[in-house]
Image (cartoon, rainbow, N blue to C red; front, side, top):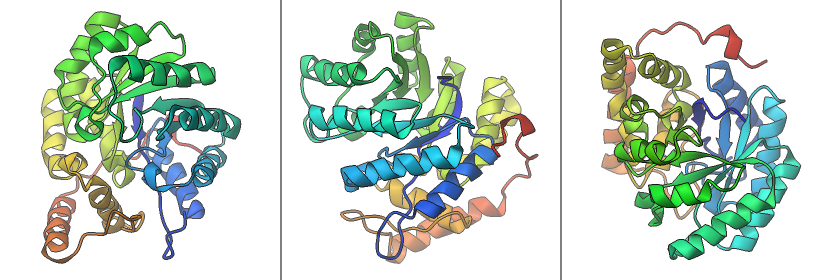
Length: 306
């Protein structure tokens, strides 16, 4: 598994009756790769995994695997209420042909480090697939500290961390303890430039669902140390990237997708689509940003999927 580059946390598209739109999701995944993304991550919080049944989750993973056809890695997010369900989903992801797993803490229960370590270890032992740990204390209330991440590094298939604490210093702290043993990704869209500056190798991206080419270009400029050109693009992109940090980030990102003609704004309850003055304000922000959308060269041929 090559943990590197821009890997979108793919949204789950719903039809008018709120069934999963597998046909669109397949096209969406291929489009993301055609625009330079290096892999796809399915069933994450942005993918509304908590609203999907176990069977729906497995079907989404199969759709992703079939659409990509080995051109890039498919990463399955593993999140559940219980450890046993998380282990079952990890095994099902392997059977579906996924290349790697992204491990989330259990829903609802914010346990002790002993409990969280036991939970994560059970998933790591369930399959030989390469695994990324998702640390998002803001959203989930569970904070995997750098010292605890170092403890988990005893498991060979634990290979990467998605750091979403909103603190770029965490990237440095993890790298100080484990060196190159783990690949560190940024998981907060408006921290990508800062994260890359202290050694992050990749980005689990949200706004890439709507603007993959711009996301890849921003990551590449930051990685190459092109300071002036990086900030020029970052400044343009930030009003949208910041949408990844709000509680209703799923609605916001899906709305951006809808505005660029790549998806619809439907979400499953308890989420509701934006409405009224809030909807109009967000649409104005999106349109103002898109009016000044930069002209970028096409994605390099070497990373365009068939």
